Image (tube, rainbow, N blue to C red; front, side, top):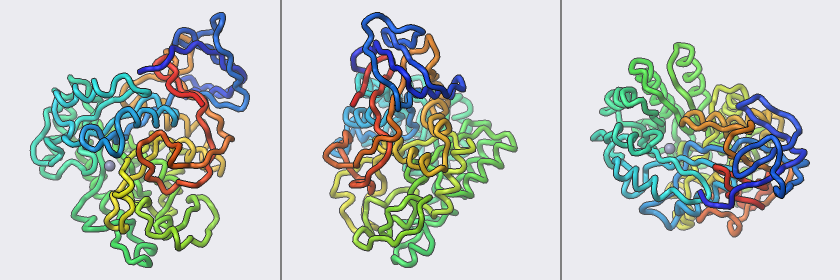
Amino acid sequence: MTGPTANLLITGARLIDPATGTDAIGDLAISDGLVVADAPAGAERIDGRGLVVTPGFCDLHAHLRQPGRDGAETIESGCRAAARGGFTTICAMPNTDPAIDSAEAVSRAVAAGAGGACRVRIIGAASVRRAGREMADLAAMAAAGAVAVSDDGCAVSGAMARETFERVAAAGLLLIEHAEDPSLVAGGVMRAGPTAVRLGLPGWPPAAELTTVERDLALAGTTRARLHLTHLSCAASIEAVRGARARGVAVTCDVTPHHLSMADDWVAGSRRFAWDEERAPDPALAFDGRCRVNPPLASRADALALLAAVADGTIDSIATDHAPHPVERKLAPFASAAPGLIGLETALSLGLAAVEAGRLALPALVAAMSTRPAAIIGEARSLAVGATADIVAFDPAARWRVDATTLESASSNTPLLGMELPGVVRLTVGDGRITYRS
Ligand SMILES: [Zn+2]
């Protein structure tokens, strides 16, 4: 990672460290990139009153589009967006062009990801070309530095599923699953339900997610493979995870910031959060391709159930599924718009909006964005003395307007454009270096 080595004293901030159970007003001193008890002479002083200081955020699911689609994002611009969002680690998904599906490709991606404003961890593809027909060499990719494997964009194919889980278990790897059965989606472009019927758009049924979740939980139970279910969007999936854990299955899961906060009424032109009072949608905003995402924005009840599952710890992590696309792939009829939206620069703000609404405690949000996802890929995070400084300092009360011209990401595909959100990152320190400040 690049950036000047941190020598800082942040005074009077709210320090939240899930690793040590800390939540208190205090000072944080950093000397030569390490957390220390006393600030070195000449350290820069930062008035931390009103700021929250926590371990740096870790995103288990991001798309950096390099190689192959660097018009939408580059590793460099994605890392800048991540640092601005408070992230010190992002995990890059392998659905690039070509896919990251071999030890050589993992090594190249690891090298390409070094030297940016954020640590980049690489996820290898589970199958060759992510085509679901031939196993990739999982053990070799792990040896080359892959922290997990995934065919994200799709679930592991049915024909390969049992063998994949067995090899993941044998290699001691982590399988990140995009749970979706394409035969049940059958052309659906938004969540099935009354809004889809009213808009005349083909519906994507929750069963498309749940059947794959249940298949994967059963396979994780019999093979003992470590399974991580990403971007869960249905309350029923969370219930399935709870049931599997009660049976002793090793499973973790994440949810995106958009599935927590937005519901399918956004496709009809609503811009209220899931916890807000009902408001009439704005017809001028209906059918906005920027609301198309996979899995689709769920019902309001699902969004609130997902939020409650973050609050009670059932969901381990908030992961962005940052999916940049060029403007022309989103300015299209809804059903033809590319699915996905950017999230690295707005994830914290959407979480803080839920905190402000009284739906989530701030320490639970911090844990779901920092220490818990980091632990899933074997990274430690702490504000304790002796730790490498890997922190974010943010002002939870400050407001900012989402503006395409000021986003660090090379893309701006988010329906949040123009909205005012809480939470401004003031400082990000990754691996002892200052990677962002405002
Ligand atoms: Zn996915």
